[in-house]
Image (tube, rainbow, N blue to C red; front, side):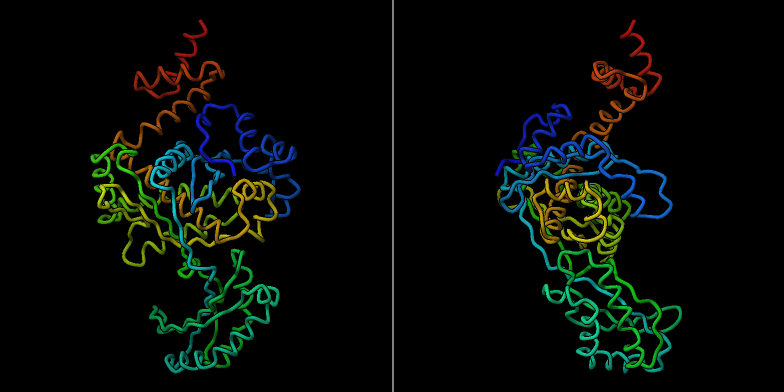
Length: 418
């Protein structure tokens, strides 16, 4: 298996990068051509959503250096924000010094919620639901025999009484193993099917029957040891610990801390054709279970090295939906070398930890703006009309002057050409 450690990858031309990716993932000529042209044909887009007028593209990049559970990965990322791909790659390079990332996964269980109202005796209704759990599970599983034959299906029932502005409600949870799918269609179908039975059992009225994106039984975890000498020494370790302590104590800081995690994860979710809104919702709601807290933790081991961990729900699939329909999503999975939802979630957790570490290290050292501004300056130079041969010099002069503006870029271009 080739290594994801590709020195100088960022210096290569687009064509050279594609050749490197092709060697790593054994891409066909057609797949290489897809990367250079529109990956999503208009006729497919027109079948995916309503009222299509075109496609909207995002930059599609590769994060290098990832060693996860002893396996090398190149990470496809679709994102518009500057420095994210570079930051993830750099963090993964540093993590390699400590053995890379190790991961864990709790399973592919999703929750389908059924809301029951109008109950005079909600606790008795809860008792009856649990007493009849086998009948409910049987009916749910009749809706998807293929999933059941694959080892999935409804595995258990939960029942909760909640207080609301409309009084007490009974909420029934179907716990469904969705295997390698994200699971929304299967779970929602089961919830719809068992609703009449639950009404008969409880004597109440069912309203909502829908999946929950707070996937507490579908947790992905990752851990990495960042050697102090590899990341800049004891002062950097101390700075990162102070940054983490800030996020742990203050929800205003924590919101941006967790957003940085999702920069990495959502970019991979989008690249693989999964529902980034569902993953974002699950992550932030999970962070709020104990009062809004960071999804990562950091501590210092006996050797003075920084140890980072992450835990969050990641409900993604490798079958069904846009993952199967969008050719670029399929190509992303091929580059990753992934077939299962579990492995995809593990990889995403590692990317989230890498992204967060990179952000904290930047904040604790030169500040987050340095990398951002260099890439921002490059965008400004291109917008101002700099040619490929002029861009680097325009960027260098803007950064040296500390003025990243369109008018400054145009002045530099004009001077270079005169």
